[in-house]
Amino acid sequence: MYLLNLQVTSFKCGGFAMGISTSHATFDGISFKIFLQNLAALAGGKPLAVTPCNDRELLAARSPPRVTFPHPELVKLQTHLGQELNAPVFDDAQEALDFKIFRLTSGNFSDMKEKAKTSPSARVSGFNVVTAHIWRCKALSQSEAQDPDRVSTILYAVNIRPRLTPPLPESYAGNAVLTAYANATCKELREGPISKLVERVAEGSKRMTDEYARSAIDWGEIHKGFPHGDFLLSSWWKLGFDEVDYPWGCPRYSCPVVYHRKDIILLFPDIDDKNSVNVLVALPCKEMEKFESLFHKFLSAWIFRMKVEFHINKLDNIIINTYSLLAARLCYQG
Image (cartoon, rainbow, N blue to C red):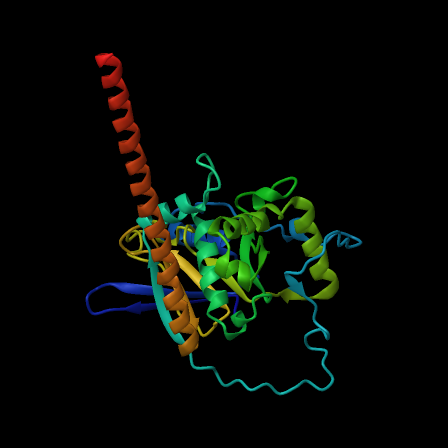
């Protein structure tokens, strides 16, 4: 596999598309944007826009490695790759999958974040509430969801640059993301308040301290494993690939290419509204039908509850104002 492939496709209208494929060991999303900014600068005859930091020793395992946390988000390889004596033959036939894009608007975000608050002053991130919503739909769309005690594990990437001590340079060019995780039973996902799921997603990110990240890196040095969970949520949402200013201007749009993986769900920005997000899902037909039904069901339930609460509050205010007027009138008459 090449470290990077780039293909330009021209259209009769005069427009063109750039398709780029890279190894994730070479770039994560943040450092890939740095690469694109430098590509744009060089194409315009300018010096590098950002001088990349290529010191991979900054994320090297400690010597000796010290695993100081349990890492249920990772699974060991029983035999190291390339060392199998009698490697099994795998069926490479692809499972038939349906592909759909679900859109969440800025209005949806407002409703979801408001409902996920545990107190009026609580702050809820858009990523955490979207992740909790998708987690619930994906887990409950599977046939195993009939078991209320089954534990579902969601994985999502966390940028560790600012979390290390000392922090990595913002210009670090490499793969500086690690996998965070959250767990919940199917019963909790089906019946529990969304605020609890949002809290668990937030806890997964908070868990990624300097020591936890170093422990995960050392775990990988010892076991040569890989992330392990029900599915991974990968976000292109705010990486800003469409903000790169090439000599011919910024891209009209930037998005991932659809690929055949039911265990990865992608978030990416909407073409018309930067405050909205698209959710790319690939699932077998029956699971997709269930996922779609749950996606709209839970979304509608949140909006309905917000409207009910709004009207209840409005009615409370009317009652309070009415009593106040009556009390004032009685006092005046007295």
